[in-house]
Every structure is written in C-alpha cells, then in structure tokens.
Image (cartoon, rainbow, N blue to C red; front, top):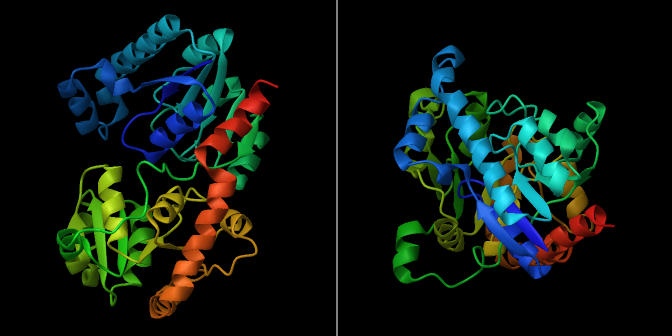
Length: 348
C-alpha cells in the first residue's frame, strides 16, 4: 500500500506521520509545495505574503495553480492508495476532488481551518475527506455544524527519532541550560499579547525564550519589558535543536493558541518525548488524556509561577509525572497507533 504525504515545513508531525505509515507496512512518498519552485520564488512569495490581495493576486494565483498542477502530476506518477495532507497545503477543491476519484483522502489539522487565512478553501476541501484528524474536540463540533463528516479526535505523539531523552554535553548545558524553556513564534497580533502575558508570569525565573519573528520588539516590548533579557532570536524550525534545548531544561511552559478551545498543542508531546515537564494551560482534552494522573495545569495565568516553583522544588515528583505522562501518550497516541486507527476506519 502506498501513501502520498503532503506536509510542508519543519513540523514535527511530518516525521511522526512518516514513521506511523512505515510501522504499518506502508510505503511513503513525501512532497512539499516549495519543492516545485526555485528558492528565490518561494522567498518572494513569503516576503510579500502580507501585501493586500489586489496587489499579490498577480503572482499568487499562478503560484497556487502551478502547485496544484504538480500535485496532480505526482498523483498520476505514484498512484497512491491514500493521500495524507497536513492542513491545506494550498490545495484547490478541484484537486482534492481529483484525488478522491483515485484514492482515499485524509487530512490532519494542525490549525483550526476557520481561523487560518492562508487558503479560502480551508473548509471546502475537507468535504472530500474520508477521514479528518482533529487535535481539538471543539473543532469537531464546529466542522460537523458546517456539514463536514468523518472528523475524529486524535493526536500524534512525538517522533522517537527527533525527541528523546539524553545526557547533554557540558558545552550544551553551558549554552542552553535553564530551569524553564520556551520555543515558539513572536506574533504581532493579539495572539502575541496572550503569549507574552503567559511568558511574563515566569520573568522572575531562570527561563530562556527562543522566538521566531520580531513581534516582541515591534509590538509587545513596552508592555512586557522584563522579558527582553530572556528572549533569544531563533528563526529556524529544527526539531533536533529543540530536542537539545529541552534536554538542557526542566520545564517547558505551553499556552493554548487562541484557535485551540478544548485541544492539545503538539508541543506537549514533543516536550514529553525529550523527557521534561510540559507546564500547560488547561484544556478539556488535556484533562481527558491525563485523567487519573496528578497533573497540574495552569487554570489562571497568575498561578503559573507558583506551579513552576512547586515543580522545581520537588524533582522526584516532577520526574515521576513526566514518566507517567510519557507512558500514557506512548500507549494512546504513538504514530503507529494513530495511523493504525485511521487505516482501520478508512479501509474497513
């Protein structure tokens, strides 16, 4: 059985999905839309993405049409049994409809399609899906209200090749060591305000904050000046780097992005794979996942520092929680199990 895997960028789900299919004895070809163009074209599109639609339509339309033409070309070459798609990948409804005529179509959602402006067809393309993996039970309710079918709650845990516990070198500890660590993006929108408000609760702690983008200096420095000395500019997506940094720390604070309502951020699993504690903003799906374990969640931002203090003061308690949480996600959400669940449903 053959899978065509369409996932762009450096997302950890890319490796997890690949491992999951291989563990279920499938062959996999991975493609990214950026592979269809010279780097300077991709750079141009990224650089001018924020321009008004009437300006960028002269080049964005041909770009997207070329992407979809190449998708269909690969489909005809590979003749897969299933196409597995992360978010929208600039797909047009006509292209997904063509996929559906020759194979099964599965989407895994990393972002709420109603909150993601990159593709006007975010929801329309889901109508063709044989199976949709959603990391948020509330998204399921939203999509089903719109008439979207075949939506199921599930999450990939970490890739064991990318996230694992190890003993860092002295040089790595000297460079990256801290009690708390955060790796993410610095949004200029109110999503950024929420993120920096959360991180500001730890400004008195030993924390390193690795951020992609200039949102902090451009928008939020005035409100959260104490964080400036904690922030390290970091503009690459490198899971190997993340694993090293996590292994040089003890706790990773994780807030919910505003488009997650009940859901689980994928970073929770990556952090557990590295062997440190994810101090998470509360969500219903997280509570369900770790039901029966004594896991503390941040239910109010102003309680966050106290929880961090408690976890840092008792290493045995914290490490035992990490072990229990990791065992739970290994049992319920490792990539082989998630893909197996999906395949059983799609091909039953």
